[in-house]
Image (cartoon, rainbow, N blue to C red; front, side):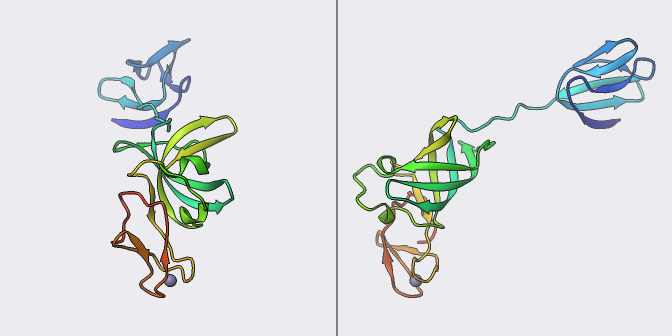
Length: 185
Ligand SMILES: [Zn+2]
C-alpha cells in the first residue's frame, strides 16, 4: 500500500489501474480526489481511497495564547504570539502579533503599564477578539499574565519569592501582572 497527501481535484490514477473508493470521483476514465487528505493506493485490490485530513482548527476568542511582549506603550502592549491552545488541543495561529489594551491587563486599575509587562516577558493570555485589523488579548484573570519575566537591569530570569519578583543576580525587585502559572519560584 502506498500513500500520498492529496488536494481536492488532484488526479490519483486512471480507472483502469485503480478503482476509486471513498472520497474520490471519476471523470473520463481518471480517478480524482474530492478532499484534502491521504490517498491510499491498494495495489493488491486495485483500489484507491482518500482518508480525509482532520480540519485545522484555528484560534478563536477564548483560546489561550503563549506570547512574548515585543513593545510596551502608554495604553497598550504589543505581543508576538507563539502558540495557541483550547484546553490541551493545539490551535493554529493565523496571525503573528496582538495587542493588549491597558484596561484588559488586570482586574484592577493599572497606573503604569510597565508595572505589568516589560519587553521580553513571556505571557499567557486569552483571545478577546479577532478583528480584520488586529487581534486583542486579555490577561485580566488570575491565571493569566506573565509566566516568565526577566530583570530589567541585568536580564536574569526573575524568581517569585513571597509574591514578589526578585533577581537572584543583582537583587532588583520588580512588579508584573503575573499569571498563576509563573514558572520560577
Ligand atoms: Zn538583575
